[in-house]
Image 1: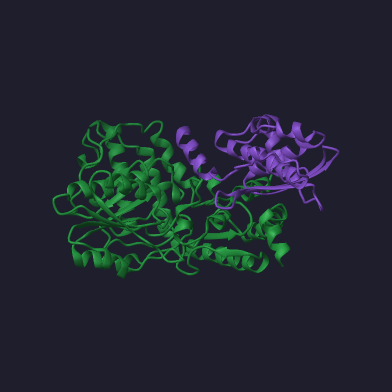
Image 2: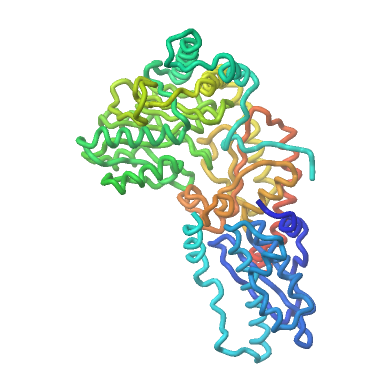
Length: 148
Length: 393
């Protein structure tokens, strides 16, 4: 059910771990839903120079985390904020429909880490405050019923 | 990719035994007659069905006339529950069951609730057990059916079926048990346990998929399930799946003849695996009762990791097992059974079920114990929950 690329990123995840004194750290998801993603970013001169992650979740959650860290490195903060869940899924040659929420989580994790960075550096525009994941379980259920 | 393949998912399904396949094969080709036909090959098919019926009846201590072949265990459950409900509506509308039944029972009960029936779902204790006293206390003047699974498919817990049966008999209430997981593993005699209806499925005991049976005690009021021809004495129309039925008969005959040795073999593998995992892997929980459990069932929750990841990594090492994780169920909630025994969601997501069978050996367990602790360790290294724990320590 998973593409070769998903399996590759699941079995050989890139950038697993933590960054000490990271410039931005974001954690999204919750254990009740079965997935949590924590992302650490190193940012120098507005450019993401390193990214690491830790994930509790299924194969797709691990693979999307891994891919997300690959996608953000080298990008500016604003460029990284433009990365969508769709882009993460496409970079993995697609995800099964029931697993698309995992790519949402990756997008949210990037945003959460960048928000943390902005907050620490006084760059946060209050109107962009995140609501990441507060209703995720409900949303997913709704989505699944539609799938059926 | 490894060439190794070790199958630890016998509660899901089992391979057809060679002797079973051999018995079935002629009924696909030259013995293809419709059992309702009067000419020789038709009569031969009829005879083959009745011989299989005798074997199923003998295995559970029933009369052949009390055995009805169906298309699956799920069909047997549906028929038993809906059939008793609709045929006994004039006596009452209340059904007693448990919170940890298979979906074939739970969803059937939920369907009946939408049609005016009242259902009590008995809660289970932390090991997945109900007591006969709970059943007694739930009985109302309107109770027409008690349906309690013999043994749970996920955590293997075996219910006090004989005690429940005697209460049902005393109160004059029909008693159905979904014995799909138990048949072939545990010797069951319907009369000793006062069972009125019992569901079984061939592919769980080395028979083919697509064939099941329902035992219906003589005298039980039960509406026909499929209307049409006169097959199964008019109770379940459909041209019989003759090869499947023959396979089921052969499979149950073999299972009954070997049940003690098989049980012993599985208990041995099970107990060793439970002991070794308990010793070698920290932050785990055995799900289900330690003793009142199916001989081949092992079910653990591994804290801080998620079940699908665990299954994928085991699969890459050539091990086939299953999980109660949401990600493997097609829904996003973890297993209803694991939630019913009181596991928090995050721990229910990290469950692993190993179910042993005929082909498994101690070498298989050696290999499992070689790779499992490593995989669990690797996933934990990746887990922010484990990291949080380490930081706290």
